[in-house]
Length: 389
Ligand code: GDP
Ligand code: MN
Image (cartoon, rainbow, N blue to C red):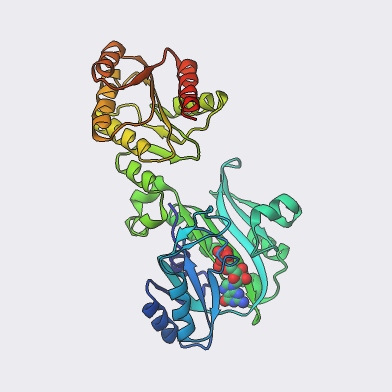
Protein backbone atom coordinates (compact mmCIF):
# COMPACT_ATOMS: atom_id res chain seq x y z
CA UNK A 1 0.00 0.00 0.00
CA UNK A 2 1.18 3.52 -0.84
CA UNK A 3 0.43 6.78 0.95
CA UNK A 4 0.68 10.46 0.06
CA UNK A 5 3.81 12.57 0.46
CA UNK A 6 2.34 14.63 3.31
CA UNK A 7 1.38 11.48 5.21
CA UNK A 8 4.87 10.02 4.74
CA UNK A 9 6.36 13.28 6.00
CA UNK A 10 4.09 13.20 9.06
CA UNK A 11 5.21 9.65 9.88
CA UNK A 12 8.89 10.37 9.28
CA UNK A 13 8.61 13.58 11.29
CA UNK A 14 7.20 11.63 14.24
CA UNK A 15 10.29 9.43 14.18
CA UNK A 16 12.52 12.51 14.23
CA UNK A 17 13.39 12.97 10.55
CA UNK A 18 13.82 16.61 9.46
CA UNK A 19 10.81 17.55 7.29
CA UNK A 20 9.44 21.00 6.35
CA UNK A 21 6.40 22.24 8.25
CA UNK A 22 3.23 21.96 6.18
CA UNK A 23 -0.52 21.47 5.99
CA UNK A 24 -2.74 19.40 3.68
CA UNK A 25 -5.74 20.95 1.91
CA UNK A 26 -8.64 19.71 -0.20
CA UNK A 27 -10.19 23.03 -1.26
CA UNK A 28 -8.96 26.41 -2.53
CA UNK A 29 -10.16 28.07 0.70
CA UNK A 30 -8.18 25.59 2.80
CA UNK A 31 -5.11 26.27 0.69
CA UNK A 32 -5.48 30.01 1.25
CA UNK A 33 -5.91 29.45 5.00
CA UNK A 34 -2.87 27.14 5.06
CA UNK A 35 -0.71 29.89 3.56
CA UNK A 36 -1.88 32.37 6.19
CA UNK A 37 -1.36 29.83 8.98
CA UNK A 38 2.20 29.16 7.82
CA UNK A 39 2.83 32.89 8.18
CA UNK A 40 5.84 33.08 5.87
CA UNK A 41 6.52 35.18 2.78
CA UNK A 42 6.87 32.09 0.58
CA UNK A 43 5.58 28.55 0.51
CA UNK A 44 5.60 25.54 -1.82
CA UNK A 45 2.25 24.29 -3.10
CA UNK A 46 2.25 20.62 -4.05
CA UNK A 47 -0.26 18.34 -5.66
CA UNK A 48 -0.75 15.07 -3.72
CA UNK A 49 -1.10 12.06 -6.00
CA UNK A 50 0.48 8.63 -5.71
CA UNK A 51 2.94 9.35 -8.53
CA UNK A 52 6.21 11.18 -8.92
CA UNK A 53 7.31 13.60 -11.61
CA UNK A 54 4.92 16.28 -10.32
CA UNK A 55 7.59 18.98 -10.43
CA UNK A 56 8.13 18.74 -14.20
CA UNK A 57 4.37 18.50 -14.80
CA UNK A 58 3.59 21.76 -12.97
CA UNK A 59 2.29 20.07 -9.83
CA UNK A 60 4.86 21.77 -7.54
CA UNK A 61 4.92 25.56 -7.36
CA UNK A 62 6.53 28.25 -5.28
CA UNK A 63 3.79 30.66 -4.13
CA UNK A 64 4.30 34.08 -2.54
CA UNK A 65 0.81 34.98 -1.34
CA UNK A 66 -2.43 33.46 -0.06
CA UNK A 67 -4.05 34.45 -3.37
CA UNK A 68 -1.40 32.55 -5.33
CA UNK A 69 -1.91 29.50 -3.12
CA UNK A 70 -5.65 29.71 -3.82
CA UNK A 71 -5.07 30.06 -7.59
CA UNK A 72 -2.83 26.99 -7.58
CA UNK A 73 -5.63 25.02 -5.91
CA UNK A 74 -8.23 26.30 -8.38
CA UNK A 75 -6.02 25.34 -11.30
CA UNK A 76 -5.17 21.85 -10.01
CA UNK A 77 -8.10 20.44 -8.04
CA UNK A 78 -10.44 17.90 -9.63
CA UNK A 79 -8.44 17.73 -12.83
CA UNK A 80 -6.04 15.04 -13.94
CA UNK A 81 -2.33 15.76 -13.72
CA UNK A 82 -0.24 13.86 -16.25
CA UNK A 83 3.31 13.04 -15.19
CA UNK A 84 5.76 10.52 -16.62
CA UNK A 85 4.60 8.11 -13.89
CA UNK A 86 0.82 8.40 -14.26
CA UNK A 87 0.29 7.14 -17.80
CA UNK A 88 -1.43 9.31 -20.43
CA UNK A 89 -4.76 9.47 -18.56
CA UNK A 90 -3.10 11.15 -15.55
CA UNK A 91 -4.35 11.15 -11.96
CA UNK A 92 -7.22 13.30 -10.77
CA UNK A 93 -5.96 15.71 -8.09
CA UNK A 94 -8.08 15.70 -4.91
CA UNK A 95 -5.52 16.65 -2.30
CA UNK A 96 -2.91 19.38 -2.00
CA UNK A 97 -0.14 20.19 0.40
CA UNK A 98 1.34 23.53 1.36
CA UNK A 99 4.67 23.64 3.13
CA UNK A 100 7.35 26.11 4.04
CA UNK A 101 9.74 26.89 1.17
CA UNK A 102 13.39 25.93 1.44
CA UNK A 103 16.45 27.42 -0.17
CA UNK A 104 18.12 24.48 -1.81
CA UNK A 105 21.91 24.24 -2.15
CA UNK A 106 22.22 20.56 -3.09
CA UNK A 107 19.75 17.82 -4.09
CA UNK A 108 20.57 14.24 -3.08
CA UNK A 109 18.79 10.90 -3.33
CA UNK A 110 18.15 8.59 -0.38
CA UNK A 111 16.06 5.43 -0.09
CA UNK A 112 15.63 2.46 2.20
CA UNK A 113 14.10 -0.71 0.82
CA UNK A 114 13.85 -4.46 1.09
CA UNK A 115 16.66 -5.99 -0.94
CA UNK A 116 15.21 -9.43 -1.73
CA UNK A 117 18.39 -10.73 -3.33
CA UNK A 118 20.51 -9.84 -0.27
CA UNK A 119 17.70 -10.93 2.09
CA UNK A 120 18.18 -7.72 4.06
CA UNK A 121 17.35 -4.06 3.98
CA UNK A 122 19.46 -1.73 1.89
CA UNK A 123 20.13 1.98 1.79
CA UNK A 124 20.42 3.41 -1.71
CA UNK A 125 21.93 6.89 -2.01
CA UNK A 126 23.19 9.17 -4.73
CA UNK A 127 24.53 12.66 -5.22
CA UNK A 128 22.16 12.89 -8.23
CA UNK A 129 19.00 13.85 -6.38
CA UNK A 130 15.81 15.35 -7.76
CA UNK A 131 16.10 13.26 -10.92
CA UNK A 132 14.66 10.00 -12.13
CA UNK A 133 16.77 7.51 -10.18
CA UNK A 134 16.18 4.71 -12.72
CA UNK A 135 17.83 6.93 -15.34
CA UNK A 136 20.81 7.64 -13.06
CA UNK A 137 21.15 3.89 -12.41
CA UNK A 138 21.04 3.13 -16.13
CA UNK A 139 23.39 5.88 -17.35
CA UNK A 140 25.80 6.39 -14.45
CA UNK A 141 25.58 3.33 -12.19
CA UNK A 142 28.81 4.41 -10.42
CA UNK A 143 26.81 7.27 -8.90
CA UNK A 144 24.55 4.90 -6.98
CA UNK A 145 25.68 3.88 -3.49
CA UNK A 146 24.17 0.67 -2.10
CA UNK A 147 24.71 -0.23 1.56
CA UNK A 148 23.16 -3.45 2.91
CA UNK A 149 21.83 -3.32 6.47
CA UNK A 150 22.13 -6.38 8.62
CA UNK A 151 18.77 -6.93 10.28
CA UNK A 152 20.27 -8.39 13.46
CA UNK A 153 22.89 -5.69 13.95
CA UNK A 154 20.56 -2.89 12.79
CA UNK A 155 21.58 0.41 11.19
CA UNK A 156 25.15 0.97 12.40
CA UNK A 157 26.37 4.57 12.84
CA UNK A 158 29.59 3.83 10.92
CA UNK A 159 27.54 2.76 7.90
CA UNK A 160 25.50 5.96 8.07
CA UNK A 161 28.72 8.01 8.27
CA UNK A 162 30.20 6.13 5.31
CA UNK A 163 27.15 7.04 3.19
CA UNK A 164 27.24 10.64 4.46
CA UNK A 165 30.87 11.02 3.32
CA UNK A 166 30.12 9.39 -0.04
CA UNK A 167 27.37 12.00 -0.49
CA UNK A 168 29.88 14.77 0.22
CA UNK A 169 28.21 15.88 3.45
CA UNK A 170 30.39 17.70 5.95
CA UNK A 171 30.50 19.09 9.46
CA UNK A 172 27.15 19.18 11.24
CA UNK A 173 25.42 17.64 8.20
CA UNK A 174 27.12 14.29 8.90
CA UNK A 175 25.50 13.93 12.32
CA UNK A 176 22.18 15.19 11.00
CA UNK A 177 22.34 12.54 8.30
CA UNK A 178 23.21 9.80 10.84
CA UNK A 179 20.18 10.92 12.86
CA UNK A 180 17.98 10.88 9.75
CA UNK A 181 19.03 7.34 8.78
CA UNK A 182 18.40 6.09 12.29
CA UNK A 183 14.92 7.71 12.24
CA UNK A 184 14.24 6.18 8.82
CA UNK A 185 15.36 2.76 10.03
CA UNK A 186 13.07 2.88 13.06
CA UNK A 187 10.17 4.16 10.95
CA UNK A 188 10.80 1.39 8.41
CA UNK A 189 10.78 -1.43 10.95
CA UNK A 190 8.06 -0.16 13.24
CA UNK A 191 5.57 0.44 10.41
CA UNK A 192 6.42 -2.67 8.35
CA UNK A 193 7.37 -0.47 5.43
CA UNK A 194 8.70 -1.87 2.18
CA UNK A 195 10.10 1.41 0.85
CA UNK A 196 11.00 4.88 2.06
CA UNK A 197 12.26 7.18 -0.68
CA UNK A 198 13.46 10.75 -0.17
CA UNK A 199 14.02 12.41 -3.54
CA UNK A 200 15.33 14.97 -3.13
CA UNK A 201 17.00 14.99 0.23
CA UNK A 202 18.45 18.48 0.24
CA UNK A 203 21.15 20.47 1.89
CA UNK A 204 19.66 23.91 2.45
CA UNK A 205 21.47 27.20 1.88
CA UNK A 206 21.84 27.36 5.68
CA UNK A 207 23.62 23.99 5.61
CA UNK A 208 20.91 21.77 7.10
CA UNK A 209 19.80 18.37 5.82
CA UNK A 210 16.07 18.27 4.98
CA UNK A 211 13.61 15.77 3.41
CA UNK A 212 11.97 17.78 0.61
CA UNK A 213 9.97 14.91 -0.85
CA UNK A 214 8.93 11.59 0.70
CA UNK A 215 7.39 8.38 -0.54
CA UNK A 216 6.46 5.44 1.67
CA UNK A 217 5.09 2.02 0.76
CA UNK A 218 3.98 -0.65 3.21
CA UNK A 219 3.90 -4.41 3.15
CA UNK A 220 0.21 -5.32 2.79
CA UNK A 221 0.79 -8.43 4.87
CA UNK A 222 1.86 -6.28 7.82
CA UNK A 223 -1.06 -3.84 7.66
CA UNK A 224 -3.24 -5.78 10.11
CA UNK A 225 -0.77 -4.70 12.79
CA UNK A 226 -1.15 -1.00 11.90
CA UNK A 227 -4.76 0.16 11.90
CA UNK A 228 -3.55 3.78 11.89
CA UNK A 229 -1.66 3.26 8.64
CA UNK A 230 -4.48 1.26 7.07
CA UNK A 231 -6.63 4.36 7.63
CA UNK A 232 -4.36 6.27 5.23
CA UNK A 233 -5.42 4.15 2.27
CA UNK A 234 -6.76 6.47 -0.44
CA UNK A 235 -9.25 4.62 -2.68
CA UNK A 236 -9.03 7.46 -5.22
CA UNK A 237 -5.45 6.46 -5.88
CA UNK A 238 -6.11 2.79 -6.35
CA UNK A 239 -7.28 0.80 -9.31
CA UNK A 240 -11.04 0.34 -8.62
CA UNK A 241 -10.99 -3.22 -9.92
CA UNK A 242 -8.10 -4.09 -7.60
CA UNK A 243 -9.99 -2.56 -4.64
CA UNK A 244 -13.08 -4.59 -5.54
CA UNK A 245 -10.98 -7.77 -5.87
CA UNK A 246 -9.39 -7.18 -2.45
CA UNK A 247 -12.90 -7.21 -0.89
CA UNK A 248 -13.34 -10.80 -2.05
CA UNK A 249 -9.80 -11.79 -1.12
CA UNK A 250 -8.86 -12.41 -4.76
CA UNK A 251 -5.28 -11.95 -5.95
CA UNK A 252 -5.82 -9.63 -8.88
CA UNK A 253 -3.42 -7.43 -10.79
CA UNK A 254 -4.65 -5.28 -13.65
CA UNK A 255 -2.53 -5.51 -16.82
CA UNK A 256 -2.64 -3.93 -20.26
CA UNK A 257 -3.83 -6.74 -22.55
CA UNK A 258 -7.31 -7.84 -23.66
CA UNK A 259 -7.63 -11.48 -22.58
CA UNK A 260 -9.30 -11.69 -19.18
CA UNK A 261 -7.92 -14.68 -17.29
CA UNK A 262 -9.49 -16.49 -14.35
CA UNK A 263 -7.32 -19.19 -12.86
CA UNK A 264 -6.90 -21.00 -9.54
CA UNK A 265 -3.38 -21.09 -8.12
CA UNK A 266 -0.65 -18.51 -8.68
CA UNK A 267 1.56 -20.99 -10.57
CA UNK A 268 -1.22 -21.98 -12.96
CA UNK A 269 -2.11 -18.28 -13.38
CA UNK A 270 1.48 -17.47 -14.41
CA UNK A 271 1.57 -20.44 -16.78
CA UNK A 272 -1.75 -19.34 -18.30
CA UNK A 273 -0.45 -15.82 -18.88
CA UNK A 274 2.67 -17.28 -20.50
CA UNK A 275 0.74 -19.51 -22.85
CA UNK A 276 -1.62 -16.68 -23.86
CA UNK A 277 1.44 -14.61 -24.76
CA UNK A 278 2.98 -17.61 -26.54
CA UNK A 279 -0.05 -17.77 -28.83
CA UNK A 280 0.29 -14.07 -29.61
CA UNK A 281 -2.11 -12.20 -27.29
CA UNK A 282 -1.73 -10.21 -24.06
CA UNK A 283 -3.44 -11.01 -20.74
CA UNK A 284 -5.63 -8.24 -19.29
CA UNK A 285 -4.90 -9.33 -15.76
CA UNK A 286 -3.44 -11.79 -13.34
CA UNK A 287 -6.24 -13.37 -11.33
CA UNK A 288 -5.90 -16.18 -8.84
CA UNK A 289 -9.25 -17.08 -7.29
CA UNK A 290 -7.48 -19.31 -4.79
CA UNK A 291 -7.81 -22.94 -3.89
CA UNK A 292 -11.10 -23.05 -2.00
CA UNK A 293 -13.14 -20.46 -3.90
CA UNK A 294 -16.92 -20.63 -3.51
CA UNK A 295 -19.62 -19.65 -5.99
CA UNK A 296 -19.80 -16.08 -4.69
CA UNK A 297 -16.06 -15.55 -5.08
CA UNK A 298 -16.01 -16.99 -8.59
CA UNK A 299 -18.96 -14.79 -9.56
CA UNK A 300 -17.19 -11.69 -8.17
CA UNK A 301 -14.01 -12.58 -10.05
CA UNK A 302 -15.94 -12.99 -13.27
CA UNK A 303 -17.75 -9.66 -12.80
CA UNK A 304 -14.44 -7.90 -12.14
CA UNK A 305 -12.94 -9.35 -15.32
CA UNK A 306 -15.86 -8.21 -17.42
CA UNK A 307 -15.97 -4.72 -15.92
CA UNK A 308 -12.74 -3.99 -17.80
CA UNK A 309 -13.88 -2.62 -21.16
CA UNK A 310 -10.64 -3.70 -22.77
CA UNK A 311 -11.38 -7.37 -22.17
CA UNK A 312 -12.30 -8.86 -25.55
CA UNK A 313 -12.38 -12.51 -24.47
CA UNK A 314 -12.24 -14.47 -21.25
CA UNK A 315 -10.19 -17.55 -20.57
CA UNK A 316 -11.05 -19.66 -17.53
CA UNK A 317 -8.42 -22.23 -16.67
CA UNK A 318 -9.16 -24.23 -13.56
CA UNK A 319 -7.62 -27.31 -12.10
CA UNK A 320 -10.11 -28.71 -9.65
CA UNK A 321 -8.20 -29.97 -6.66
CA UNK A 322 -9.67 -28.49 -3.52
CA UNK A 323 -11.81 -26.30 -5.77
CA UNK A 324 -14.52 -28.34 -7.42
CA UNK A 325 -15.32 -27.84 -11.10
CA UNK A 326 -19.09 -27.82 -10.44
CA UNK A 327 -18.65 -24.93 -7.96
CA UNK A 328 -16.69 -23.01 -10.56
CA UNK A 329 -19.31 -23.67 -13.21
CA UNK A 330 -22.10 -22.49 -10.91
CA UNK A 331 -20.17 -19.30 -10.17
CA UNK A 332 -19.64 -18.58 -13.84
CA UNK A 333 -23.30 -19.21 -14.71
CA UNK A 334 -24.41 -17.07 -11.76
CA UNK A 335 -22.15 -14.17 -12.80
CA UNK A 336 -23.08 -14.49 -16.48
CA UNK A 337 -26.72 -14.02 -15.43
CA UNK A 338 -25.81 -10.82 -13.56
CA UNK A 339 -23.77 -9.30 -16.37
CA UNK A 340 -24.64 -9.45 -20.00
CA UNK A 341 -21.84 -11.59 -21.39
CA UNK A 342 -20.89 -10.15 -24.77
CA UNK A 343 -17.39 -11.54 -25.22
CA UNK A 344 -16.28 -15.07 -26.11
CA UNK A 345 -15.70 -17.33 -23.12
CA UNK A 346 -13.22 -20.18 -23.31
CA UNK A 347 -13.21 -22.68 -20.46
CA UNK A 348 -10.67 -25.34 -19.73
CA UNK A 349 -11.21 -27.34 -16.60
CA UNK A 350 -9.85 -30.53 -15.25
CA UNK A 351 -10.07 -32.40 -11.97
CA UNK A 352 -12.67 -32.95 -9.25
CA UNK A 353 -16.27 -33.13 -10.52
CA UNK A 354 -15.22 -32.06 -14.02
CA UNK A 355 -18.10 -33.89 -15.72
CA UNK A 356 -20.66 -32.19 -13.47
CA UNK A 357 -19.02 -28.84 -14.15
CA UNK A 358 -19.14 -29.33 -17.90
CA UNK A 359 -22.78 -30.34 -17.68
CA UNK A 360 -23.71 -27.21 -15.70
CA UNK A 361 -22.05 -25.01 -18.32
CA UNK A 362 -23.68 -26.90 -21.19
CA UNK A 363 -27.16 -26.81 -19.65
CA UNK A 364 -26.86 -23.10 -18.87
CA UNK A 365 -27.21 -22.09 -22.48
CA UNK A 366 -24.10 -19.91 -22.29
CA UNK A 367 -21.99 -19.82 -25.44
CA UNK A 368 -19.00 -21.50 -23.86
CA UNK A 369 -16.07 -22.56 -26.01
CA UNK A 370 -14.82 -25.75 -24.37
CA UNK A 371 -11.11 -26.44 -24.59
CA UNK A 372 -9.39 -29.81 -24.30
CA UNK A 373 -6.20 -28.62 -22.62
CA UNK A 374 -4.22 -25.47 -21.84
CA UNK A 375 -2.66 -25.05 -25.26
CA UNK A 376 -6.01 -25.64 -26.92
CA UNK A 377 -7.60 -23.05 -24.59
CA UNK A 378 -4.97 -20.43 -25.38
CA UNK A 379 -5.25 -21.08 -29.13
CA UNK A 380 -9.02 -20.82 -29.02
CA UNK A 381 -9.11 -17.59 -27.01
CA UNK A 382 -6.56 -15.93 -29.30
CA UNK A 383 -8.55 -17.12 -32.31
CA UNK A 384 -11.71 -15.71 -30.74
CA UNK A 385 -10.34 -12.16 -30.52
CA UNK A 386 -8.78 -12.52 -33.97
CA UNK A 387 -12.20 -13.20 -35.52
CA UNK A 388 -13.58 -10.11 -33.82
CA UNK A 389 -10.88 -8.01 -35.48
P1 GDP B 1 8.20 15.15 -7.70
O1 GDP B 1 8.57 15.90 -8.93
O2 GDP B 1 6.84 14.57 -7.79
O3 GDP B 1 9.22 14.16 -7.30
O4 GDP B 1 8.09 16.26 -6.51
P2 GDP B 1 9.21 16.85 -5.53
O5 GDP B 1 8.61 16.99 -4.20
O6 GDP B 1 10.46 16.04 -5.59
O7 GDP B 1 9.47 18.30 -6.09
C1 GDP B 1 10.06 18.49 -7.36
C2 GDP B 1 11.16 19.51 -7.28
O8 GDP B 1 10.66 20.74 -6.80
C3 GDP B 1 12.28 19.15 -6.32
O9 GDP B 1 13.23 18.29 -6.89
C4 GDP B 1 12.86 20.52 -6.02
O10 GDP B 1 13.81 20.86 -7.01
C5 GDP B 1 11.67 21.45 -6.16
N1 GDP B 1 11.22 21.90 -4.83
C6 GDP B 1 10.29 21.36 -4.02
N2 GDP B 1 10.16 22.05 -2.87
C7 GDP B 1 11.06 23.07 -2.93
C8 GDP B 1 11.43 24.15 -2.06
O11 GDP B 1 10.94 24.31 -0.94
N3 GDP B 1 12.39 24.99 -2.52
C9 GDP B 1 12.98 24.83 -3.73
N4 GDP B 1 13.92 25.68 -4.11
N5 GDP B 1 12.67 23.86 -4.56
C10 GDP B 1 11.72 22.99 -4.19
MN1 MN C 1 10.54 13.88 -5.82
